Length: 131
Image (cartoon, rainbow, N blue to C red):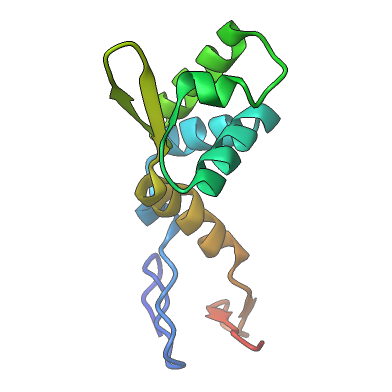
């Protein structure tokens, strides 16, 4: 079994979940989850996912019934959180998902806290993968 403070070792062929400290620093986690906390921003991510590529800021804005300034603010928050990549073109900006950052921060955090475990009599956390 693992030492205190390190990721537990598994013998069932699954990868070890990352420790919470391995996921990201507190500021990065705060930015990512603040960005994900808004329905419009989640909608923007979903639209980009469904598109399967990039969309211009105008194409994104047309999908929502809010003023352009609101969309612009949401795109800025998502970009600053590292969840979107922005490609500046002649007269527009095109946005695409930064899936790697989304998986590395939000995905790993969710995987870590969603992994079930039980404590042994000695207090060691043992992870169960019964499906």
